[in-house]
Image 1 (cartoon, rainbow, N blue to C red):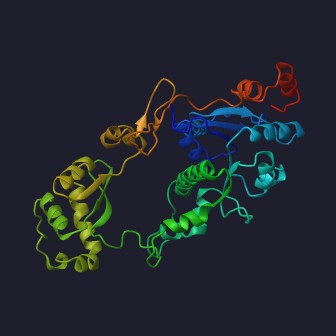
Image 2 (cartoon, one colour; image 1 turned 30 degrees about the vertical axis):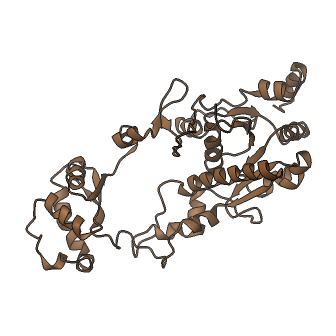
Image 3 (cartoon, rainbow, N blue to C red; image 1 turned 120 degrees about the vertical axis):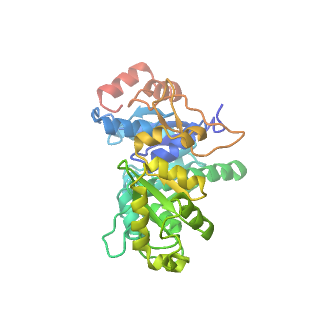
Length: 372
């Protein structure tokens, strides 16, 4: 039995940030009802299906056409029996349907609403994770000096925002339990990402900053190994792993400051060594000598990584494909992985019939009118 059993969440989210937040809550027992359009065509693209399956396990799905008055009527009925409404549309969308917080709390006085957007509800900005990276300054920082910005290779901001939203929602639920009052949580992903950036002077540095050596080095097998030397003790460990190379006593590499000054030359010498070994061998040799090192892994490598396996990072069952587990481990509160991502509308009968008491005749009429 999940710790959040009895909490009902009406989920209007899509893409990544919102679905990740509601997936976390569903994993701990919340009843998450995902609202989807009945007009969506079946998506045959394997990547799109995999993406949808990843972020929507443990959820229920209903189809509902919010461009029809009957659809708005039904969703208001659902709000009245829910604890939470969460959405990550552009700021104008929910208000255009008459489903902004001012109207929702008229339907249920203690309702909690969570809104995720690029820059909050008072802004007209819209976009995806890379938009947030750019506006927050993260994209500029992920560059090599003198080179164009690169940005992270995935929607880092969406993952952070999803975690943040789930935590703030739990806080709001606890406050409601204590004082009986709901609230509107207005989340700006740009503001969240700004808080995640370092406090020192912000400038693109690539790997040109301590520790040193600090880089990703090519290896014999075509793979790469990331290496970072933080202390003089670790510097000694690296030289020992390389089997005391001819340059080990070179004055140019005596101190951190001198190694930074001659970084390019040092990187070339280390590359000469790494290219004689596989990435796995380089990692093992360095780790045995107390140096932080790790193979740069692709998706297949991650699926079989022994560290992730030991941590239970990936799960697989008859109900779900190989998929990432909840990253939060609690000794007394276990997540559950009961059901795979739902097909659109698979729970219409339960939600509209059992929860709202609509008759089979009414449901048939709604389907004919493309309401559900």
